[in-house]
Image 1 (tube, rainbow, N blue to C red):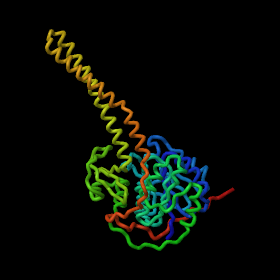
Image 2 (spheres, rainbow, N blue to C red):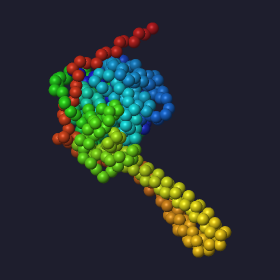
Image 3 (cartoon, rainbow, N blue to C red):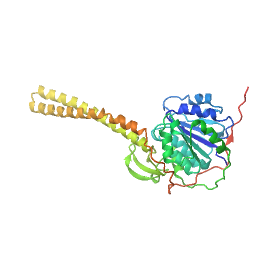
Image 4 (tube, rainbow, N blue to C red):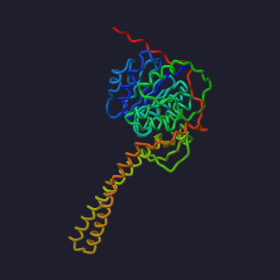
Length: 372
């Protein structure tokens, strides 16, 4: 058994980073490479074609149930999670994670669940903290964790979060990664014959594939917490993995701390503007009622409605000041730049199963491409 599965996650700045990384991988690279980059959900992606121009390996958009083939690069498609299920690719419109579909953590977690130590995870440039939890899962199952050197990343938040929360094996500039990968994918590993009967990462992979979260045991993944899901307003459970805290609701949506905080701000801002809308409608209604009362000679009612309109005017002025307050932008910017804390390693979670579901047979090699 070898480390023959490489999963790569990137967000902001990822296109340029991948264009630097892929040319350094040899044409006979003896592993399957899977890439998730955050993509606009409603637009076709030309990322596979762009990356193919930079790569000596074949690059293709991932297709559901396609068999994994070593020597091939598979790229996630818009509005679909990319996962590994046994020795096949899976595409799914399962619940978004940290507001994204595809999400880096989904791919990483599925690779860890099914292939454990055979997996190498790489976190590249990006904002917030997607990828850290998935990299933790890979490391938890005996795989290799690699993060881009933050100083080398256009947006350092994602690799910083990975380094902060995971005992990564290598922190590298992109140009150093191919040299580190070569001995990793060629080394023989001792096969693990044990198979987990139940595993949290496998359960979450089933949720991402579209299984009902409640039936998949979402309530057993962590403890009930105070927060509610910003996507569907369902209750959340808090999941702890080493120093990582993340959240999942009973319909399946999942969030890192950073993603939950960022969306929480957006929800509050939307609520403020919604309140403004209701107050403005109420002001118009009270003005009409005041004019109607005046026209009918009901001065007492007219005065009451005029006072109510003035009160609403005062509330509108205060509420508009809240809606336009720069704290919204400041808090949103701060959430994309997580504070660096001292690295504490990847503390083991006693509730996490240590054994994944590795398959004993290697993935197939790609057939050499003919050259004219």
